[in-house]
Image (tube, rainbow, N blue to C red; front, side, top):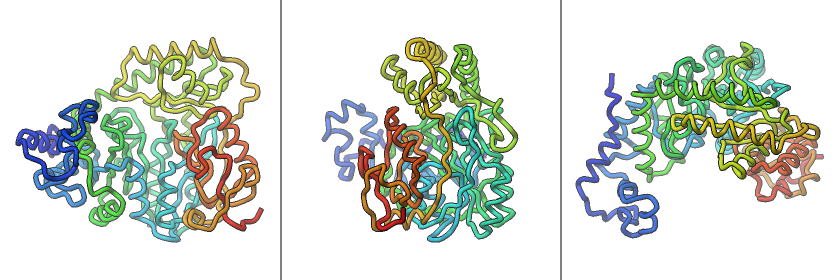
Length: 484
């Protein structure tokens, strides 16, 4: 057992700060002296700890001392065989997972509602997606988890696939039967990769869905900065015992910076310590706040704050009770409209709004009075702006038609067409609402009238659309000479 009260990177930084070393290395602001405006913004202590890799502070690319100790502590805290500290966000961790198991032409079985980072990794390595199309809840209009029958079907039809990729949980809090999927993957010689961007708390809370490592998964990407309290852009990549740590580090080093931020590294170190010592209590309080908020929001009428009552034993095997996901269409407003109103009228910034739902992200920093303010604002939004749902689009899952691999489409010769003229062509770029960053279109997929209707409607409602070269998304890049 390691001493989880330790924070070796933070401790090394504190010792280094006391040494008052004269810097003739980078960064060039020289502990803030060369950039007084930055120092005023962030504070002398913060810029004083923005230092470069050196012997006393170890090196993220090849750690042998304090960073290695921090990795070992994180691995133990999360129940993993090894943990990597990631400073390129969970996007970097997700892409490292995919690049570690697949090369050009290899297949990966996955749900279509994955984060854009998964598809980006496939563009980089040339892997081919095999989609397990998720069921969709007709009332909520959201994609669910992967049913076991559909996973078995995908395995039977693609026995050569290298891995199965799972969201645990989805952005909305829905979990698949992860343990059963891991078992299926291993029985068929495949690895199981898990995106736990929104599941850090599974490792520390009680009465929450099973974590990837506890389920026996091979790799998991964990957004420590989301529910775990570390600085934005800091994450962990966790490995199971069967994965070659040295090879994965080589993959990580292909794309991760050689100038890792010690502010991010120390925040991971300190936040891991905090959760290892106090996570059970902290996330218990988060779950209680979420349950109270759901009860109060549902009492308003019209809104539906959903939770474990959705569970069906398969495509909704479990639900993350800390997630405050709320369906809004019955009050006559799209989720993105409620999102905008809360910010513009009530100074409340929630995580995201889509066509029919909002997500208020609760974590260890929230307070009861903030919950009360959110509930009150939602009641006011309904009273002042609510109406009939007539004319609102029912959000639904649109099954993609994959014509070519993401890599082939992304690098192919292409042409730019007006949005409505692109129907029937093969898309060569991403289109998504961000957040949550799940592609509406990915490179290699066929563009349909239904998809174009969805994009136009999302734009009209004010969704933040990203991905294409054209920032206004009036044009889409398609494969040159592709068929209609």
